[in-house]
Structure formats: C-alpha cells, structure tokens
Amino acid sequence: KTKKAEKAEKSVKAENAKKAEKAEKAEKAEPKPATPKNIENLPIKTALISVSDKTGVVDFAKNLQKLGVKIISTGGTAKLLTQNGVKVMEVGLFTGFPEMLDGRVKTLHPKIHAGILARVDSPEHLQSLEKFRIPTIDIVCVNLYPFEKTIAADNQNLTFEQAIENIDIGGPTMVRAAAKNYNGTAIVTDVADYSAIVDELNSKGIKNIRGGKFSVNIVSKILSNRRYIGEYIYRDIVT
Image 1 (spheres, rainbow, N blue to C red):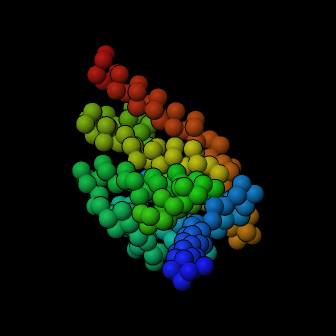
Image 2 (image 1 turned 135 degrees about the vertical axis):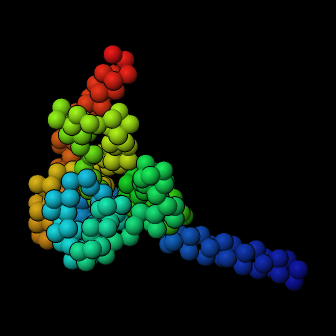
C-alpha cells in the first residue's frame, strides 16, 4: 500500500471509531424504559394533590412526604398543606405559568398532563419527558367540586352564575388522564383510601397502588357529576 492509501485507511478507521463511540454514548444516555414486569415496582416520587374535600389530606400529605414523595398542589389545598408544615410546590411554580381566570385555569397545562399520561414502558415517552424536563406524576389525588351539594334545594339563594363556577374542569381532566394511564399513575379520589395507600407504600406494596385498584369507582363518579351538571343546565336554560 502507498503511504497515501494507508493514511486514508487510518483516517476512515478513526472516523468509524468516533462514530461507534458516539453511538455507544447515545445508547447509554437513552432512558431505559420500564418493562411491563417492573412497572408496578417503580418508586412513587411525585404526587399531585388538589382536593375540594380536605378531610384527612394534611395527614395523607405528611405521610407521603415522610416516604420521600414530592408534593405538587393547587390553591386552597396548597395553602392548607403549607400552613400545616407540608412542603409543597404550587402548581404555578411547577408549570412556570400562574393560575389565572379566577382559578378556572390551574392544572390545564402540558407539564401536568404529560407527567400523568406518560407511559413509563415507552422509550419515546421517557425521551419526551427528559427533553422537556418533566417528571412523572405517580399519584393524582383529586376529588371533584361537590356540584350536587352546591345546587341542593336548600341553597335557594344560589344564582346560575355561582353554580356554573362549581363545574369542575381540571379535576375530571386529571382523573381521566390518570385512568387512561392506570398502569403508571395511581388515582385517589376517596378520602377512605388515604390510609390504605400509605400502608401499602410503607410495606412497599407499590404494585397494588398502580394498576387501577383505587380507581374502580371513578368512572361512575365522573358520570354522576356530569349528569347533575347536565340536568341543572338543561333545567335552567332550556326549560
């Protein structure tokens, strides 16, 4: 071989070696997806808590915090938790976008819903989260505005405008998102489930929290809520 040919060959080998090294680094950097076998054992790192019924929520949040779970919260829930010594990140700080329109828009943000909806067994989903620096939201603790109680017959001074402000938008949206991603995100809508969830986390029974165990009644709750809203609006506007 001529010196020129040898030099060209060495150059090609060096270039190929660089490409191989770059590919290896990229492969190592790529998020490793959880498999269907170990999704249930992934740690619970982040919970979003936004409740209208605040019964027991302080103790629930404190217990989650003791287990190392970071708390994201909204409005009155965040204020209550903070006043009782629970460290929370308000949703506006988390999303980088403030609550607005008198609280009508709080959690309707891609950073919230991407964290809830991301499939942890999907490399593409994990890469998207990493790209936009979004953590998974592992627990969604939400109960809906009590529309049925708001429009109760004994609340005779209630105006139509006051009633429609109690139509929950963000709550059902987050709950439906978590239900869709039931293998990766636990849904908590019932105060009675708080202690059971903490007990299972303490005993490392994470598999029972994911998988929809605590979301059995959520579909009926949402449908019931929608029915009351529909009937009220029909009665007030159509009839």
